Length: 188
Image 1 (tube, helix red, strand yellow):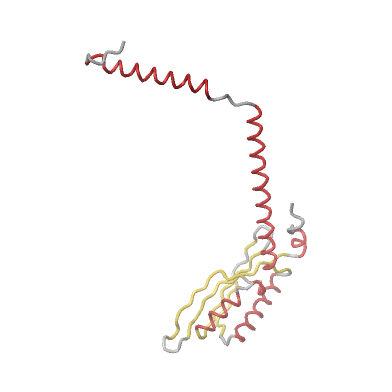
Image 2 (cartoon, rainbow, N blue to C red):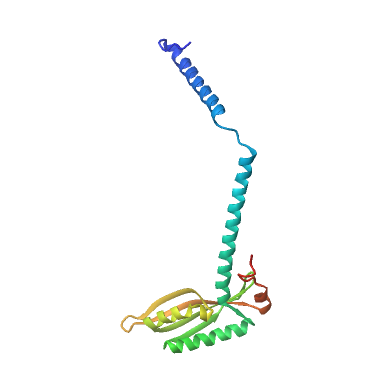
């Protein structure tokens, strides 16, 4: 049957031997590997469901933590009043750090899902350490302002004076929307 001495019969003999080996391996697989049963399938579904439930619980925890962080930065009320309050807060902060505010340019408000973003740019000048301290103090949670961009350029290399162009935002929601936002305790 297998004639490896004859050159014409070597390839067909080799293919027949490989086919027999594959047939034997398939037969052994059918005998030794048990077929899947209903209990194993159900166990896999339960495990998948448990994994999904834990992932959902983790996502809810992350969502509650993010909402708590966002709530600390939200302001309520009329956008014009909020913007005027933010300007007053910036004036106070620039006086505290002995900086001069050269420009305050409100930009178009953007209405997001449940909040309104009030972006603006402000230009402040002063000594570099004071400007950096001003940036750090402005981007704190207590100010409820968000520092979006900061560009610092040297006004005069000899004196250490710099000019910073800052992109700031305040997020505003009205009281009805704030009350409707879910809290971490309610979420679940």
